[in-house]
Image (cartoon, rainbow over all chains, first blue to last red; front, side, top):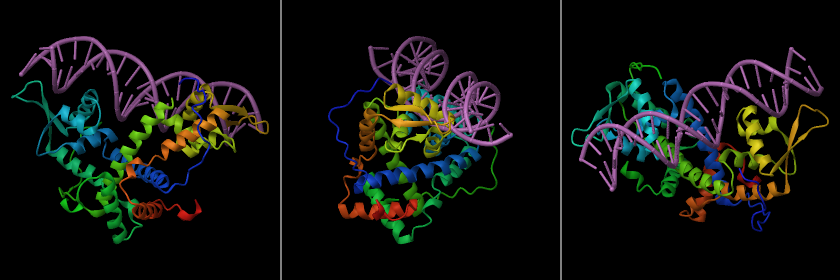
Amino acid sequence: MAQHTTPTGSSSVLDQCTLAGDVVHRIMHIAGALRHYQDTDLAQLGLTPAAARALHQLDPDHPLPARDLAEQLGCDRSNVTALVDKLEQAGLVQRRTDPADRRLKTLVVTDTGRRVRDEVHRVLSDSRLLSGLTQAELTTLRDLVWKVSDGGCPEEC
Amino acid sequence: MAQHTTPTGSSSVLDQCTLAGDVVHRIMHIAGALRHYQDTDLAQLGLTPAAARALHQLDPDHPLPARDLAEQLGCDRSNVTALVDKLEQAGLVQRRTDPADRRLKTLVVTDTGRRVRDEVHRVLSDSRLLSGLTQAELTTLRDLVWKVSDGGCPEEC
DNA sequence: TATTGTTATACTCTATAACTATA
DNA sequence: TATAGTTATAGAGTATAACAATA
């Protein structure tokens, strides 16, 4: 890290308490707690967080080339190799060379992988942290987070 | 990772669409996007994410022993050493041995550190992702996330 | 030539264990 | 003996660059 000199006249204003900034801080705090619970539970399934999320992204009914998994995970192709290595060694995924384009290796979820993936999904959907909200509050919160993440209509699900 | 055998009779039920589970997924998605923006902006300040968050935790007006910073960051003492090394090399923080207990080293934020910390705070409060919400929706969202994170009353801030 | 998957390599973040200097 | 900070080390995650096989 380089020696730091004073940036252009930054004010010392502490706008800690803007409404939106406060929401951002709280969301990050909640997400951190959620991730902590998730990672602990994923470890009990014998999976590292990244491997579990890779398995979760795979669709058992529509095998995917590794390139596409990398894109879905938002990481480089080179990382997928190690993740799939782990999943393959655990018997959850199989690599199959695509006969139509032998450069591609499609990732097939095994029967065991299917079951573990369901458990991973359960872990990633665990909502014990939201248990303090009423059903009405949950619905309101869902609509708001959907609006933020711009995911379309909640009814589609 | 160990060879995986079938766990106890797990159902193949796809409860992807429970209300609360959906909210959890969305929160994680939003938090990931927020973190992506934050880490990019923090890098432009010449700071790694962890170093920036360490600086952010420090109170310029109330120097803190490294042990307490570790606790606030939720990580081990041993990691704080490297983080503070970076901050000290960047001229943002100084280590001072506590004369009352020479085992302690208190972390003093320099004048430059104060200014950079303000910028870090601005980055961590950046709410461009929430710009699609009305003021009323923001207020509702704040109340809900406060209730989830059980942080007390919003008015205190 | 361009693309896929792989390998080699490096950096960040985090944890554990052992060491030191203080108390 | 107990605690604070440090060091050494290891694992996980992610990135870039170069390579072999294939298109």
